[in-house]
Structure formats: C-alpha cells, structure tokens
Length: 457
Image (cartoon, rainbow, N blue to C red; front, side):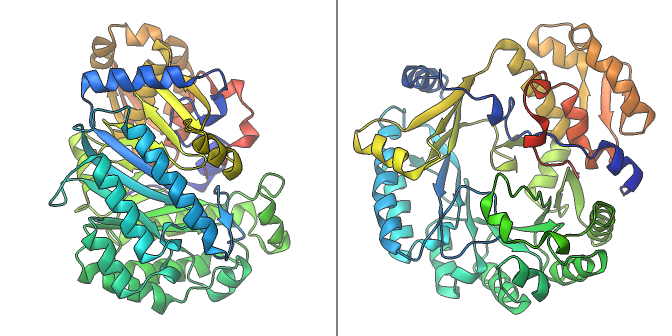
C-alpha cells in the first residue's frame, strides 16, 4: 500500500510532462517533412512492426468547462459528416504507404466525443478501417473507444461490441450534482450505472473511468462519496486526473468560478484520500494517477515487464508504430513523431489537396532514444537495471547518466527511489511522483516552459 504523504506531494508536485512521448510535444518543430514520414514508414515496413491506429473525433454536443482537449462544439451534425469524409481519405492516404499485412494490434478512438457520430457513421468508419488494414479477430487486438455516457444506449453498446471494440474509456469526472452543474456536465449516477450494466452484459474486456480532482465545489468528502459510488460499479481501471485551471490557454475554463475551486492543500488531501480509498477497494496503483484491478491486463503487464506508455497512456501494446488520423493527432513511426494540423480548416484543406496534413514533428536522436527508453521503463516497470540497460544500448549507463544519478540522491533521501548498485527501484511512495523521477533524466525539460505543463499532483 502507498504512503500518501502530502508533504512529499507538496514538495514534488511541480509542473512536468506526462511522458506520453519523449520529448514532449512542446519540442516538436516544423522542419519535419512528408519525406521524413515516408522514410520512417518504409523503415517500419521493412521491420514489419505491428501497427496501432488512433482516430481523433473532435465533436461534442456541449462543452465541459474543464476541457483542455482539441474539440469542436456544435449541434450541426453536417460538420461531423464532412469531417468523416476527410478522415476516411486520410486513412486511405496513410494506408497506401504501408505494408497493410502488418497486424493492427491496437485501435483507439478519442476526442472530443467519438460517440457523437451516428450508428451508421460509426459502422462506416469501422468498415473503412477494416478495408485498409489487417484487423485481428477474436479480441486478439486492443480496440478501444472513448464514450460519453450521455450519448449511448444499450443498442449502441451492443453495436460497438459487434463492431469489434473490446475496451471503453468512460468519462465520469465526478458524481456530485453540484460539481457536475458547475462544469456543465450533468450525468446522474443512475445513468453511469446503466452504461456499466450494458458494458458487462455485452462482455467488454476492460472498462476505464476518468475522474478529475480539483473541480469547482469539490471537497475531500464529496470526492470520497464519488469514489464510494464508483467502486461499487467495479471499473477495471480508474484514472484520477488533476484539474489544471489554465483559463489563459483554454478559454472555456473562464466559465468556471475560480472562487469555487478547492485550495491547493484541499486538493492534496482529496488526492491522498481518494488514492487510499481505491487501494483499500483492491485497486493497484500502476503509477502517477492510474489504478487497475490486479486481474486487469494493465496490472498483469506491469508484473511481467511488458507495460508501455504512449499517447493513449499506459498500454499493453506499446511495441507498434502509431498511425494517427484526424486534426491534431500525433503519429509515432520508429524514431519519428509527426503531428497533424490542430485547426480543422487547415487539416481539411491539406486533405482536399491530397496531401497528408502534417504540421510539425520531431526526429529522435540516439540520446533521445536512450532517454525515452529509460523514462518509459521507470514509468512502467518501476525498476531499471542500469547494467542490462547499458548493454542493450551499448553504453556505460552509470557513466552516461552520472549527473542525473547524483541528482537522484535527493529523491533517494526522500524515499522515492532506492538504488542498489546498478538497480534503480521506484518505491511504492515514488509511484505517486514517478514523473518527478523521470524528469531528472529529461534533457529537454529545462528547454521548454515548465508552466505550460500540468502539475504532477
């Protein structure tokens, strides 16, 4: 069990990357070209790495005031239909460059609200994907979709399962009606419970729920009531995110009454109590703010040393090239990141010209690759044998990271990590603050504005 030490949370709870990539997207630049992408795709074809597909569906019927996603809020469904035609075109363009016999082992639909689309549109997009890629049957792939519980019925859940989705991520955020009203997301507990019942009825393999702490009118006791209600539904995974109030960057957050936000000390107590309650309910802290039941593949992969981290967060399928389609979507192919245009107009204009809508990216150097691997192993395995790591990369890892290991002594003294010869182990307490451990090995962090990141806690 974790020691939910609020003093350490306060001391190390600074801004920092979430390490869904290394370097973070703040390091991306516009010098990356379509030729760079084509070369990376060709290398991946030769290596025959498996594929992962991310589709960004940005539309929402109404706006949640806490939202920091790249989304389009509209009641005009024609915009989604127009978007879908371009999205299918982008899938076709990217598939034409790929050896599509490479297995598609992971699919994730994110947003926005993917379930904004109609049943016919969802079906059409799944079939279009299947025509262009080598899909896996019998739930051998990890095919996931984010759903808004306000946009689904039992029939729609049945449709999603029949189309091959086996995992869902459910936006819950908070179950207190006053908090829901303050963030413009009304969804009573009974509605969430019904969706869980349908998901279980149709045998979805894993259900993730997102919670947010630090929202207006939340308190330690109100969040505890939400946790009490949620654990009775027994989601397989729970993500407990810190709300970052940045109205200068995300204009919609100006709708939130700042006087209703909990004070920083209250937020620490909220996180500590909620995390402790989840562990008492049988959930395992995977790292940072992610929890999973021991029976879930995420927890099992961590035990087996096969857990990975990518743009969808923790995953058991991290050894693939990520092909991402839609506005703002980020692909990773080998050592190359490329991000699409973040504005819908520019994204659509490139596709209308039969051009991949690439805005910027980043080609990893050898040093970037070494650091990315080490950070990934710290975040996922929570233990690294530096001698074995160095042998894999053909470096003297203890000498290579000599400066970082000196800085690590402060974290050792505070009980976040233990160093035993060449072995670094993140402690149970350190799992809460593993981003702070990873940041020591991040050569790019000091080069970007730290205040542009969310706080660790």
